[in-house]
Image (tube, rainbow, N blue to C red; front, side):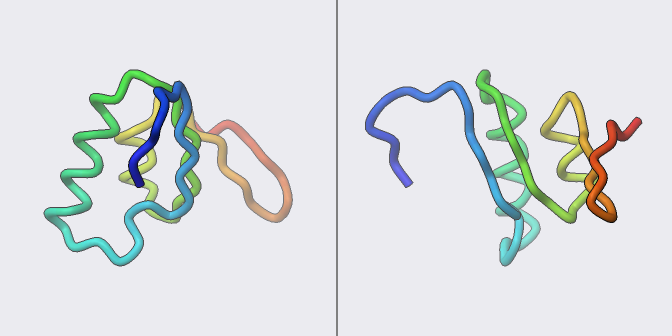
Length: 67
């Protein structure tokens, strides 16, 4: 999806679903280099930790900071 204006925040829902490994790695590298904020919903804990600086885990209806 091409954005017509600059943005400062991306909201991504399961961004690695249906991606092969090289595509997932390319997406990870692009997101790590991206200067804006990210909100990522993912079941891929390794990917989430690689592209974010803080992780909030939602389990059984409760949100907690994951360390």
